[in-house]
Image (cartoon, rainbow, N blue to C red):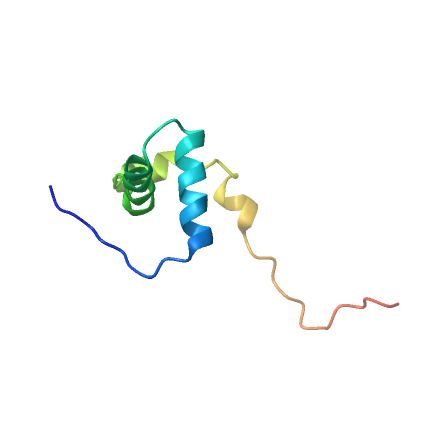
Length: 78
């Protein structure tokens, strides 16, 4: 397994990392690994079929037909 060394971290950030690790009941190193894993993990790629199936039904195509413009500007303030 590789090692990672990060220098020049603000002391307030280091303290926040320590506190976060304590709240979660783990070592500071384990907390760092978890934060990095969550930040860098990529979601599983879905197929086009899966994406299509997840789209909500919004109506029939006819519901979205364009109404022909009569050419005049709308009379908003009449």
